[in-house]
Image (tube, rainbow, N blue to C red):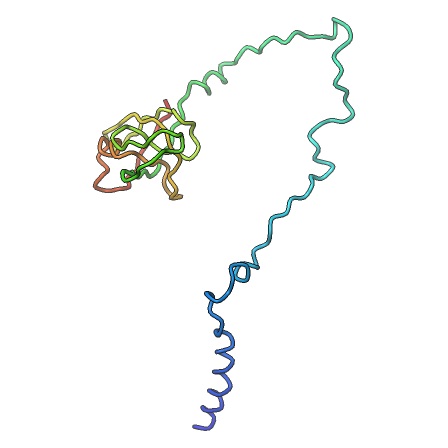
Length: 176
């Protein structure tokens, strides 16, 4: 029985050492990441061309064919879509220990009512509500960089909403 255990140990230990003999730190960056495929751009297929080659771009020759460019009267549906405010909700956090410039180029001041959003244009005003409290902030930065959050608030905005003790809170935001 002892001989059988020694034979198994002699056979498995060298095989195990061969698998784990090269630490990752000894490898170069390229050797560790060689399995990730390189991005390659291919030309668009012929069938997906967005321009129509068979149509000519000549203006109409007679006045009867020419139609004046009169702007279309906006329908009530379009006006309703333009006037309705965008509302979103989710988790918001705050940041206060940042010195430097925001993504918009302005200096960060934690005592101003500002916020960071991933896609809203800089200068957008938001009404942020948490519970019964609400505050109007201006988007001047990009973020948050945590996927589950929708807004990063300045310290002043977080204090106004009363979320500084929690750090992260459920909010509702309305674009003004």
